[in-house]
Image (cartoon, rainbow, N blue to C red; front, side, top):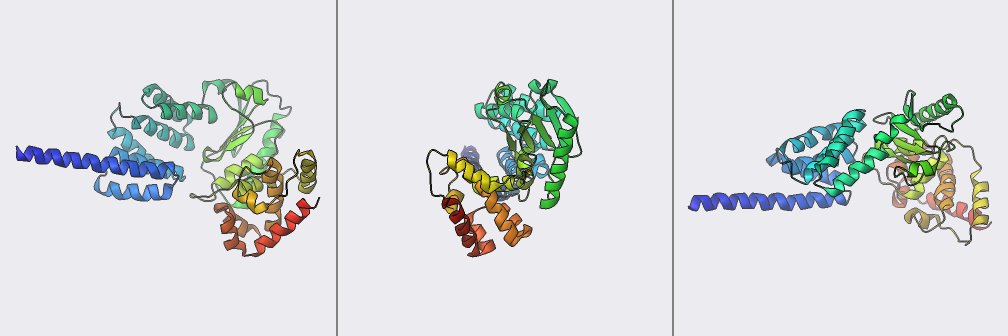
Length: 354
């Protein structure tokens, strides 16, 4: 009888141990500490290599860091060892679908998302899968879209597209991605899926709230026909500069505006936007850098693009790439020194004096 109690106590301790670590890993995931998530889960896997919870968290962390091929065997092992009624099973299917999509296996990805939805055991995982089916262009809704392939982009044109010259549209964006990729020296994991809509209203019918935008992690763009050539492509390319990238809205949108290939006069646009503003604010670039919502949109786009232009002219490409990996003001000071404040002060004076 004592031996039975001893076994029961051991199993109970193992269960409590696993639950405590599950919470720890969950907290790391939801606070986006993916490097630490991978490190800690790897330590737990050393003593319990088949544990589906540890395998799943480890695989999810690797995928979030961009190491999707490395994460695949861990997610697969989680699927093999998780009970069908476990609410973690849908998340495992969801993440395997993401991996297959990034590996250009779109039919497998679509079926795995559908399997997750059909599991009917985890509302959040099901909601995520429904969303990604639409976002990634896998939903049956897209079956009538015209597909055109270029070297680095798969274009999906809405039926009865209002694009008057599809060949020219494709060529211009193919040239853009080659130019942007060459500048940053980045190779993305898959061809960009470039979905071209006729209007916001058409996109809303399937749940796309507002055009245009990029989902950089999955190399997907939802575009209006008249968007600039390089903005969203730049978001995709620069996302893969670092696996643990830290982004700020001011720098992230600024680089996309700077490389939108439009040749717009940014200072002229800023002055026009200021005249249209109902409230005239004195702009602090540091404040905009640290707070993504305090100013009108032109501050985070056009002004940010002008700021990127100036620091690139002054300090060059290599320093800019280092800033894009960690886009905080504090990192900018480490890279550029206190001279960064001189650039900020001069630009603020130009903007605020008009």
